[in-house]
Image (cartoon, rainbow, N blue to C red; front, side, top):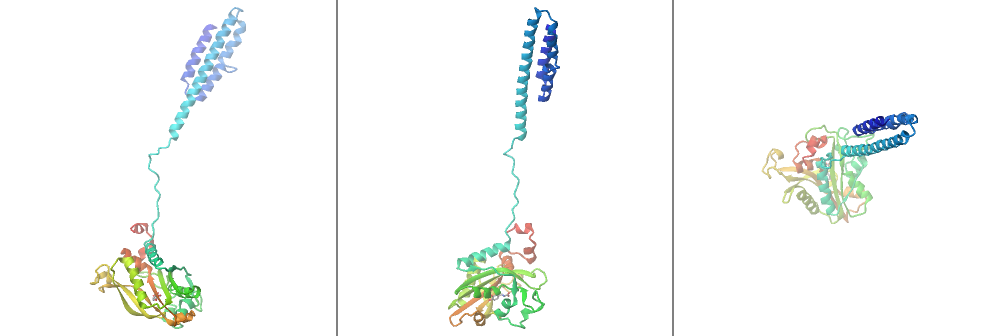
Length: 341
Ligand code: DAH
């Protein structure tokens, strides 16, 4: 029996130290120490031993059991710490790896130009107004002194919603002048940017939807000199100090006198080139002194108050500001285009 116990001790300790997993280790525990295990089988034979041999073999058997148990415990601890180390290794976070890039959008060049315009006018004490794109013809035309029969009211030019031509997509931001006069106390200093709509075919300089910024001042003793001074400030802020402007007589139903303002060509400096079509000047906006009839229709006393107004195309302003050749680029929103500004 001694030999059997010694052999068991040897094989058990060897197998335990060679086992590679917690499952294999558990199988070994069952194999040697379990109810049907090898050591248990040996113990069952103790009864057959002589009374002298029995205590000696019992002691040896207990020793072997204790040693196998210890070997199992130690191996279990070793395997567990190995598994933990492997898991820590596998789950380790490499903080030196590059992060995932966040793709950002880009501000649209036209809105960059609009923000510049807003900043200039807010700095001069103007309020920025927002108004409806679906507008009454009354405000878009009648209240702006363009009565029945005025060519701009034609169905071939304007998007109407009804047979009676009363509700329309505004064709200009000028009805915001009327909305301001009807709702604000005097004096008034406002700009009103927004979308406008006309029945135009799309090409390099036209679109059925585009943007304007309306500007208006009504106060006591306001003159054309104030209009010119303000617009020159705008142009110098947008296109640089010393940018030259000129004012040409024009006609709008809601201003008298009316004018258009040109800016000296940034390409040729006024000599004449393809950009300015040989003119040396580029048309930028329409403006004028508010027609007394427009003020009177809003109940404003023209003996006390006068005012000026202007309307500027935002796409054109941005195109000139950023030297963009084709209007369609403004609306396509190709990120490769937008990222250039
Ligand atoms: N509303 C005009 C247009 O769309 C632009 C304009 C001209 C606005 C003169 C004004 C102005 O306020 O005074 O062509």
